[in-house]
Image (cartoon, rainbow, N blue to C red):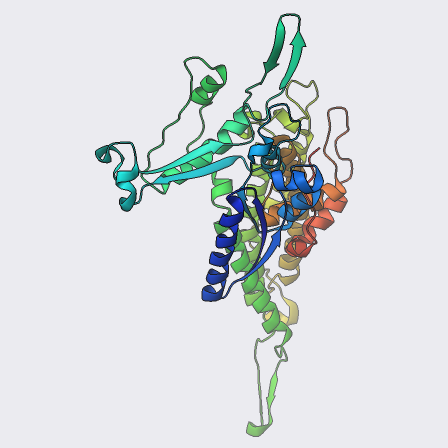
Length: 445
């Protein structure tokens, strides 16, 4: 595999660390057949010396393009003057903020050979194995206002420690997931006795232990549909390449054989199965769309409005549309291959009709409705992503989000709901190729 690493040595010992880390990665690449491409960039004091800023624009662009960032250290004694307006640490903070790096993982594990080097008693520190999870993009470092000023009584300064439910939830989720894979123990370190923001960490709102089934069971639902579609594709290929003549002439035996190779039951049953498998996929998509619009479930403003407390219903109108489309699609799902139509055609010889046209037409209609259901879910999901500021996104999710935002903008407080979703319907029809689209950098409203 090929990986691009943005290397930012920074200052001091960071330069030595990154040199050795690059050597280690090169050895790993050689051993496991990986290719690492290193792009060295400036940050911290070294960047200030060269460009005047702690995080040059080219460094940030390289970091966003890269698979990972290898950071050394920032800080230099010559920048310890508290009156300086540009400091090395500003580069690190800006990098964290721009890339959404909200969780810092700090393992604490003592090597037995260093047991005697600690000032803590050996019986206390022996065998320690901790993982400290620290929040990085909220709190004092990024709270506003943060300033200093002159008064008649002397100088004053203020820093603001602000946290939101969303900032707390995402880092706590990281901590719980790590604890689940370790000793299943988690401790929250705070100052809830004196700090209001710490009490917010303690309180939190009650959460469901598990996500709804329409999220957790998505792989199984889509897997069943993929299997059904594979069967239908196979049966279509068989019928297109089959001889459906009747009777069959067997010249070697000087006879005709009356057969029923024109019977399309295997194909019709495969089309029936495809509709049956598609139905739960569409009903689940509908349920997810409706849940996004419900504040108690999503934790976002009701109807995905631009903010809470609006008089308008936001995008709630899409709830009626998606449920109506789903109801219509669901009615097309029942099989038709068991239908038998009595007939006296050809004196009762041709007494069976396989309903192939009906089976195919119903599947086509169901797919058309499904494209519109998925289009609505895509629009609502993009709105929810913007409201939650859930960046950076994964590769596939990011590509889908960017593709939707090219067609439908964020619905702001004073904006009308999207009037024409047909371009998004066309996008839904082409979702299979969305991963091949050029990457578009996420934009926040």
